[in-house]
Image (cartoon, rainbow, N blue to C red; front, side, top):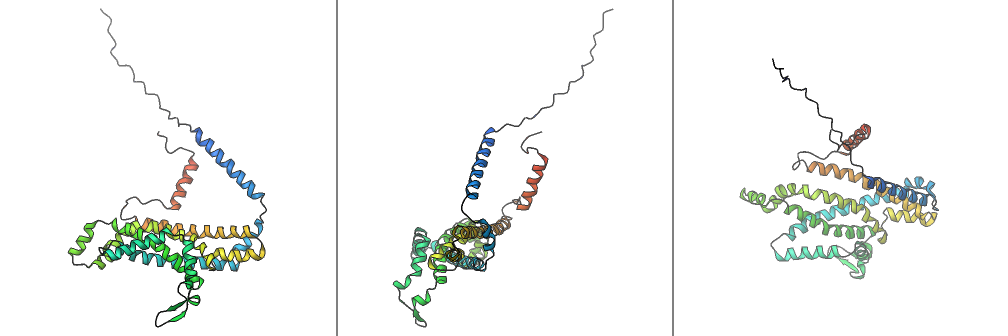
Length: 309
């Protein structure tokens, strides 16, 4: 009898487990080492500088410095409000079918964006050379008495900001579909009501982010108001340094306060942008606290999130 052939299938051999080996990025380590070395050198240079760092915390809460911080906030908010209101008006004028109003708005934007803010501040401060007497019919006085450092700073910063805000508002209005305007007119809404109730609320998603950036920039640009003797932060720091001779130390104090102010308003800007993004994005960007928790989890696990398992 012939031998029978064993037809029993051989047991399946399980495939070998795939080991994902992350790509080594040596350039990142080199770049990181170079950056750390540069930071160390900069730190050594500042530590060996003839700067009395111990007096900086004392001046941070000095009453004169705090007064300058308040004046910086005050003039920045008022100038931004002035720029925002005029910016909306100029944007509407720029988009008008009336050639006179659109031309005037274009010339305004061209002039104020094309000349330095410092020059505009000095022109307003010395406007008495052009108009010695301010005569409004019901009010008459010398221009030197009317054009105070505060008013010169407000007009110089606010009117300059209006030129930039007009372009931001115009871009926001143009981002809204024209069908919204046509539908509003079909419902019997006037042009002004359509702009106020339909167009601007939808345009805010485009207007808010650059407006927040403009306000943060206004906080820093307000430092130019020292040229017209307005008592903002830089002017108050210079007043103290002229008697204490701690020039660089007071500039450090002013820089710290600018960093504090801009950081606070940057957080407000982030949450404001996040609020207006709800209508256009299903997945809202994470908050700073959520990002911090995510990064802590990643550092705690010591795992590369991009490696596939």
